[in-house]
Amino acid sequence: MIDDNQVQQWLTDRGADAIEHPGGTLLDHLSRVADRLTTWATPDHVVMAGLCHAAYGTDGFVTALITPDERPQLVDLIGNQAEHLVYLYGSCVRNPLYPQLAGREPVTVIDRFTGDSHCLDDSDIRAFLEITVANEIDVMLHNEELARQHAQPLYELFSAASHRLPASARRDCVLLTELDRG
Image (cartoon, rainbow, N blue to C red):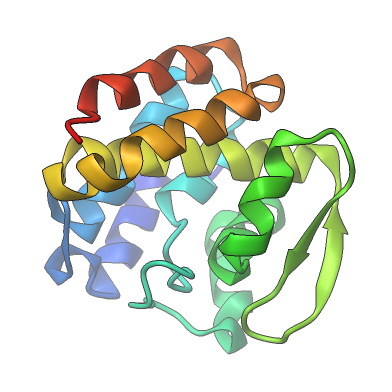
């Protein structure tokens, strides 16, 4: 069993509590994403991946707490399944990936660290999408300017990909329509 307090301490030791992020600090954001995933009854490894989803930085948030060379450290802390999702989330190039999420065909992801591409299996697609939805809802709830720019397009993307989301996540996507002030 993964010790949530140990993971929170690791994130704090890596400076997540001092990095500004919409709604407070990166640690605040990561905790809220994990909490939202928990309310959706997602598997524990997906919740843990949500808690650490920005550990390697992301295509949209370049500040990293750890480098890809340090992956074994995160594996030891949160396990293989969760770390695999954290790496997937942090390493993916989003622009070519997002439009694929709405389809039913195989989804190919490009690794921004290596340039390699590979197809995702259905469980990885679903977990990635759940973390993405929880992340984007939290960011939009805490940044009015970003909500004006991105809430509606995100709602449209998540609606089109709703066949890959649990009902609880689909219901929360409606929050994005309430934030669209543009």
